Amino acid sequence: MTNEQAADFAAAVQTLSRFKLSLPAVASTVAECLQLVGDLPNLHAAAKFYATRHKQTERKRVADVVAELLQVKAARKASPRYLDDLRSRLTRFAEVFRKDVGDVTTAEIQAWLDSHRLSAQTYVNNRRVAHLLCEFAVARGYATDNPVASVENLKVSSGDIEVFTPIEIQKLLNAASPEFLPCLAIGAFAGLRSAEIERLEWSDIRVTERCIVVGASKAKTASRRVVPLADNLIAWLVPYGGRVGPIWEGNHEAFYDAQQTTAILAGVKWKANALRHSYASYRFGQTNDAGRVAGELGNSAVVVHRHYRELVKVADAERWFAIRPGAEAKVIPMAAASA
Image 1 (cartoon, rainbow, N blue to C red):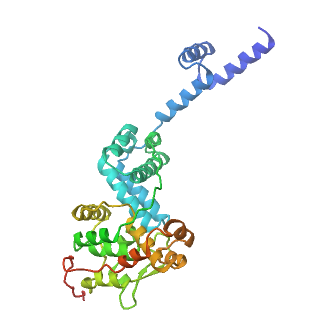
Image 2 (image 1 turned 120 degrees about the vertical axis):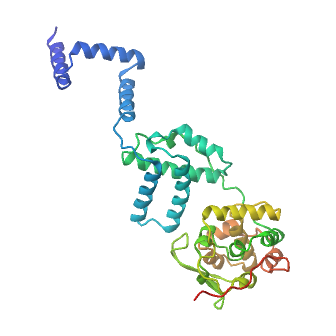
Image 3 (image 1 turned 30 degrees about the vertical axis):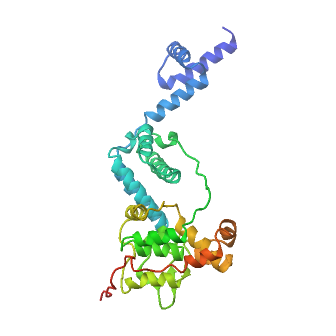
């Protein structure tokens, strides 16, 4: 044995001393492992994988992890809109996966996403939130890895902006339930986002001032804005005068269901975000003022110019804002305000 070999032997024995293993035993075991994985880098990777999969974790139910995540996000001052979206999606996730979060598998999550006929955007949103939950579970020691990381992701194409025609919105309004009608009218003739409408209160509608006040806590951009009340929107809302509390009293899922039900009853295909797109398009056609419309929408004039310029005819814009309740429209009697 050369001096160099003797030094290597001594160093190897010293390295193994804390494990109380002999050099021949280690050499034999490593040789067997190399036959399985090929080389030392692969052997190291296999060992790291094993360590990750077998590290100690705390058993915790999915529903409890959801509650903890929401509590953390609220403490970190996440926006109400973001929290509402998280709560809605994660509650549904917890209802499906009634087990410890560390036992949820990639295959189960993939099957859950595939079992619903979701739009690409909804699929991506649900996957994103599930990934956030599982990543949180790993960081807190409730799971060894994030099963969502290997779940198929989809690319969402922005596609063409779709709007409702005046005839289509008239059909939708006529088919809407009394509870959903104000939401539909506000989306069509004031351009508020669905999430903003869900948080809107009747006190935010100022008929005498001819405006809707979208408070910072209710707006997507967390900044207050004032949207004008069109004459025809006032006509749709007058029968609800005196009401107090939230305009939409159901939850997010019920709001979505109301959209789909109304579209089916009206015989009109529901188009994603088309109420807001319609308002923006027809309002721009009516005013030809991108800055003004941007202020009403709560976004930028650049966006309005890029997406809504010359999308509709001026004559159709006039027809849109002339749509009022007819004899066949469903409205409810005026209710007295609560004391």
